[in-house]
Image (cartoon, rainbow, N blue to C red; front, side):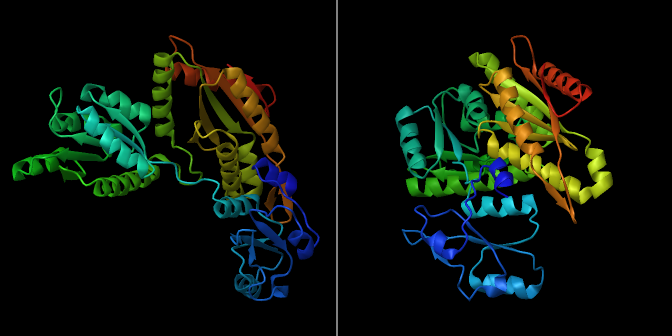
Length: 393
C-alpha cells in the first residue's frame, strides 16, 4: 500500500497498534484503521492532534456487510474501504479528507478609467481573497481577461475610450466569453439604462457609491457560480480533466502567450497502452478506473499551472507552460514509471498498466495545430517503438 500511495504523493507510516501511534512525534493527516470495525467501541476512531483538531479516519476491512459499516460509522470513521482496496477509491477518500485540492482564488478583472477608484475596488476584492487585474484602458480588457483567465469582469459603465455597454457587446461576440459574468458599476439610476444593461447580458448592476462589502459578496457569488458551471461545461465527467474542445482552446491561448512573451511551452500527448485488452479482459468498469487513475496521477504530480485534458477515450493531452520539451519529457517519464507500478484490482486479480507519450515544444512560426501534430507524431513513434516510453517530437 505504501508503494501505491507514494505514487499519488502520500507517505504511509505503519504502526503495530494504537499505543505506538499515540507515541508518534508527528500527528498524521489521516489514520487508516486496518482492523475489524466491530472491534471498535463507539467513538473509538475519534483522534485529535496536539491542537485538538480531529484526525480523519478511514476503516479498511474485508467485511462488506451493513453491520461492519455501521460499526465503523459509530466509531467515528470518515470513510470505509473494502480490502483489497481499490486504489482510486482509497485515494479519492484521502484527497477529500486531506483537502489536497482546495478551491483556487477567484480571478477578477476590473475595468475602470479612474485608476484611483479601480485600486479602491481592487483592495476590497483582494481583502476578500480574490486575485484581481486592473485595466484602465478598456481597449486592453480582452488581453487582460485571457491572460488573467478571469472568472468575472467588473466594469465602469461610463468611460471615454469605450463604454461598459460597448465592452460587454464585444465580449459577447466571443463564444468562449458568452458565460463570463459582467458586473456594471455606475452612478446612473435611469430605468432605461438598467434595461439596456440587462439586454446587453450583464449579471449585476450596482450603483455608486458602491458598498465594498456588497461588491465583494456580489462578485464572489456570481464568479463562484460561473466557475462551477464552466467546470461542468468544459471538463470531462469521468476524470475531471478538460474536455477535448477546451484543451484545444487552452493550447491556442498558451501558444499565443508563448509567442508574445517569448517563453517556453511544451505540449504532450499520452495514450494508455493496450487499453482495449484491459476492457476486453476486465470489463469497461476496470477500464474507467484505469483512465481515472492516470488522470488523478497527472493532476496530483504535475504543477497547478499545467493543463490536463482528456483528448478522447484513453488519450490525454498535457500543456506545460514555461517548460522545455526535454524537461516535460523527464517529468512525464517519471510519471510513466510511477503509473506502471500501480496495481489495479479486478475480483481476485491484480493487473498493471502502462502509457506512452509524445512531447513537442513551441517554436516561432509553429501554431497550435502544428504543435499538436508534432506531439501526436512523437506519440505514434513511442507506440511503434514498443510502448511504455516517452518520445520527443
